[in-house]
Image (tube, rainbow, N blue to C red):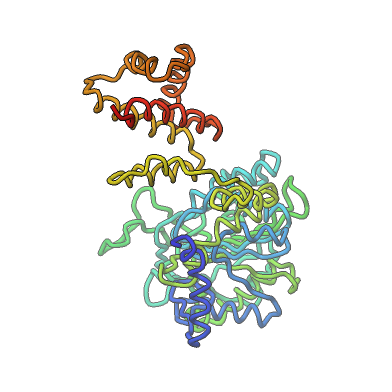
Length: 458
């Protein structure tokens, strides 16, 4: 019942909100249905106005594999590292010709990019066309620009816009970009070297932002730094069908507030979608939102929690074919066996007043097919009753034989000790698999001893 309730809880939420005409709210930062200042609803609506269809991933990034590269994946402000399977999905999406927009303002996903960088480098034949250590990484820290900002150096205004490998497509009609608590792309990464938007020379990435008087320290990035980079992976040693990547060091520039205040930000966002899709408005724009800080009381959290693993199994090529069989085998244990003949419960023979626990356990073990535990219980009960009946301090099968050879002359000594030895072997390994027929034979053997030595009238 508990599993049933949890399995159908998301559906119940959907039906309840529909029946009572309740409107879901989306408070998380960078949510495409969040209409507040920190949401991306404006970005989504602008993209749809360009003729694109937009979708949101709430469960597992593996869903993107269903498009086989014919989609643009958008990853905004991840608050945690990607899982290994998510990194593999991103790489497969790029190699299939798909494109990706990644915006990360604190370098949260840098550890994930290390694996992605290795995979892309191997796809390039082990040597990158850039003299760098990786394709993508962020510097971390908060970008402070003393020569170009709005109200605070933490709100830099980027005016150094260059035509990079995109041919100037991303910055067409754009005079400046306004950032809000951003970071920077590593100048040593491929996307950093291919940067199309750069800060001024009096810039650094402050890692101790709480300091009252921040100033560049040793080990902090400084100088003119890239904040936007764009490359087409097809120019390397990989297939010409490989996709494009745009990396931005501030997802806040796409929020409703920033795009509303600064039209150039909105124009840059439109250019980015157009370049990544190569002008093909039939490609869907898929926003990956399961890496956001989703509140646990939201509908997205529950749907993502329940559906993530099911989607992952169903979208993996090798697992998807096995998934129905795994499900069938998993629930088979809990289904009734209609063809199994009903046998008389062993517990009925031993049913006595005050022994309800014993009878219940016997019924349970027999019902579950755990016949070894049935044998162990009836033998343990026999030993206890014989010791009590004869006031023995220690159980000894040889003493039992000495009594039984007079009570049952037909019983052979060799068969008696062979059967006792088998019973003790099973009792020592209650997880042993034995047949129902063997269990019944041993049961009646024990029952015979009990009837002769315990229940017999003097």
